[in-house]
Image (cartoon, rainbow, N blue to C red; front, side, top):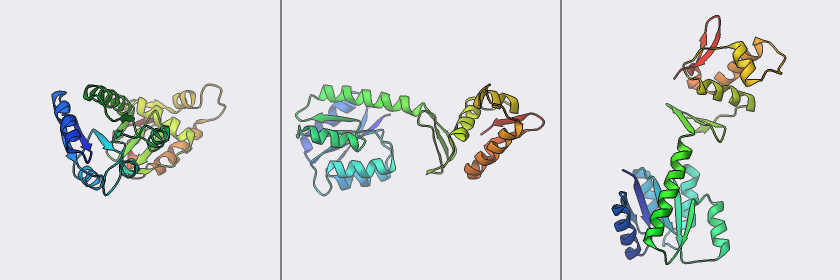
Length: 220
C-alpha cells in the first residue's frame, strides 16, 4: 500500500488529509513539525510527503532541503503564502508540487496521484542490481550510494550492456553500437573501456562477464 506522511502543525488539516487519503487507498501518517518529520522518515519508508511551510521547530522548506539531500521521496508543499518567490524557492529545493491554502481535499488527492505516477515512471528508468544503481534517463551510476565517476563513453557502454542483459555481445558488436559504424579502431578499444568501467564499478565489477573468444555480457 502507498504510504504518505502529512506534516502540518494544524491538527484539523492533518485529519482532513488523513481521511481523504485513506478513502483513496493510501496509508497516512501524521507529523506536527519539521523535526518530527525527519525522525519519522528515518524509521519508515514513505512514498510521498506533504509538508506545510510554516511549522514549529523546523519549517517545511528546511525539512524539505534535508529530505532531498538524502532521498528522492516526492514532496508536496502546503502554504498559506501565495507569493511567487515562495513557490519558486520551493521548486528550486526540488519540491514536486506546491498547493496553496485553503485547498480542496479532492484537488490535493488528484495532485498526489499525479506526483506518484510521475515518480513511478521515473523509477522505471532506474535499474538496481544489489548496491549498483543505474539511472538510465539521468545517465548516472551510483555504487553503494556513492556516485561513480564514469566518462560519457563508459556510461554508453554500461547502458548498452545493461539493455542487453545476459546476452553475449562481441567486441565488434559493441564497437558498432556504442562507438557507431563510423568509428575506426580495433577491439582493444572495447577491452580498455571495459577495464576502466570495471574499476569504477568497484565490488560490482564482476557483473561484467568476459565471454571467452567473443566479448562481454552484463550478468547480475
